[in-house]
Amino acid sequence: MRNISSIARLGTPVAVLGVLCAMMLSVSGCSEPAGRAPADAAAHAASPPGAAAPTPTAEAAAIAARPAFNYPAPKPVGGKVRGVIELGASGFNSFVVRTDARRNWELQKAEFDNSLLMENLASNEEIRRGLRAYIANMLDYGVGGKDIHFVVSSGALKMAATHRIAKELTQMGYVVNRMTPEKEAALGLSVAMPPPFANRAFVVDIGSGGTEISWLADGKTQSVSTFGSKYYEYGAADEVVASDVKAKAQQVPAQLRQTCFIIGGVPYEMAKLVRQGQERYTVLNAPEAYQFDKAKTKAGLVIYRSLAEATGCKQFVFDWDANFTIGYLLSLPQ
Image (cartoon, rainbow, N blue to C red):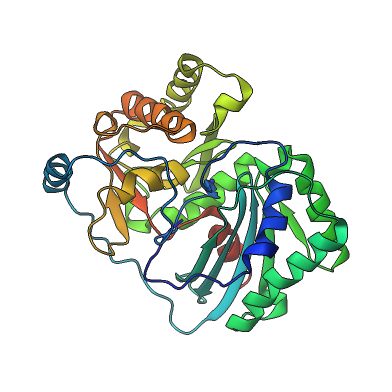
């Protein structure tokens, strides 16, 4: 399961990334922007197509009606710079993050690969050459070789091309960390849930391949998984998806439904329509305020609407910096 205009994007050559994305899109064949990505979720600068922008009058009214969410996220003191590259269901996403001993973190750079190319255009050597170039960009930024990590999302694991790329990484000496929906939910919760809200909020990560809903119960992560925003590729009907999302969302305890911290590609599309300045957190409008034309964003809106109806939550807060892969970095020894 694409942000920050204030953060510089990594300069990976377009030709190199095209080779990598050609492999990652081998199953999809659908032209769409990176999700939670994945990406998932946090690129300030990227503006993928697909959202039908509201009229200026409607947009002004929506912004006026939305309360700001002014939580000062703690910044790391000292610490070290680490990098993580996600092989997601919609392409490659990468993050450079500074973390400290208390697991405070700050996003330094992010890149979301939105290339949409044909499948199986790369030989193994081309894949290897592309990965080396990707890694070199992080090394140039000052990330140590041992502090570059690779994570494969649970959605990407469904794609045959992913396993070719993972094999090449392994042969290059890198550990490839394969995710399950449960792991993604726990990691997303650890990075998207501000500690003061642990007893009154839950987290949702709407990815291309799946949606994770998570919360804390007695200090332990609880989670459920449902359809992702590309469910239409599998022939699932909107009504079936809505019913499943509602059934899963109703498992969130009533006392935790005041606020939902939400990340992912489609929430990004919603947040960018109403973001004020460079705010870290953007409160989304109610589902009925959005209209989209593209398949992925329309499907994501079905999920968002179902979440709102099932939980009664009135405050969905998008975090422009959070991504479950950053949670993976925080899980490592600091």
